[in-house]
Length: 376
Image 1 (cartoon, helix red, strand yellow):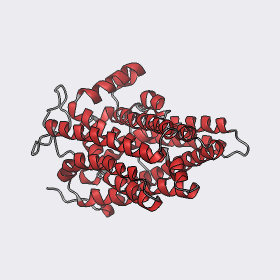
Image 2 (image 1 turned 60 degrees about the vertical axis):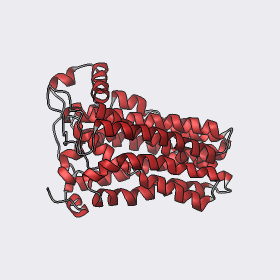
Image 3 (image 1 turned 30 degrees about the vertical axis):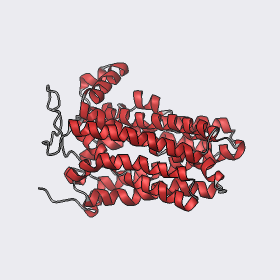
Image 4 (image 1 turned 90 degrees about the vertical axis):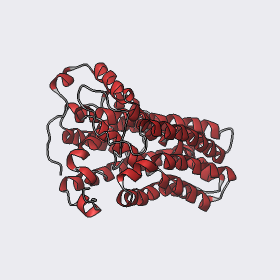
């Protein structure tokens, strides 16, 4: 068995350091813009639905970007794609900061900014396994040629999209792993109704920021610990139970807790969400390199579209019932789906099953799976 990688090993890779810092800056900018716009909308309108819709506006463009732009990172050098996407987003975000910008214009700029996120994220996710190998993956970049074959590059966008869906949904294991990832739409509902939720508790923008920060902080702390101290086979075995817990924990909000207890509930739910590491790594191991960016783009598109729809639905429901009840119902639905997916995964990947690895050319992937994993 190869030695387990440490964080020192991972950050010793110069390319990964550059990629990691670029991702931190990119995500921080996107999140700050999204949260600020959501708070502005709720402050001006007092409507949970409109606030949730504004939050969802930062996710909906993934439908277009995920379908038609994600595979650009397979047809073009991935480093170039990341640099170009962030350069365009920087210009658009700078325009959002202009004084006197109307609210609708801000939403439109956020929409356009998000459009360039899918190719950036797909390129980042796809290039990481080229930089970190084996256990190093569980967790300035050299220029690399495009990964897609020439005949794939020349095919039409619709043909490539159909092939991508066939690849992702045609393999039972990939399909289940994809759906595990999409559960995020249920357990991130507290983000979409954070403003009205904290308003019911008598809190303001600071309380809303604490709700949003609690999930990020818990994820930041627990994810590296989960990667470091839980072995690959154990991570995969824990994937289902943790997915159930991350959603089920939110049911506790039905008890109408105060702000401090709510923060603990949201943090615990986010901590259980570390199961995404197992789902993500198992997914990437099964996808051929020349289709990796597109597969990640489709997966991310589903997550973001699901989040956008969940946020709007939650905002609409919060107009009729309390935001706490909305969060509890969302968690219960997600937990039930997670139970079904866990049972299906055990059927596709029985305990002790042989590591399937990548699919062999010309043959369907074996239904026996795999301690496939390492990270999200």
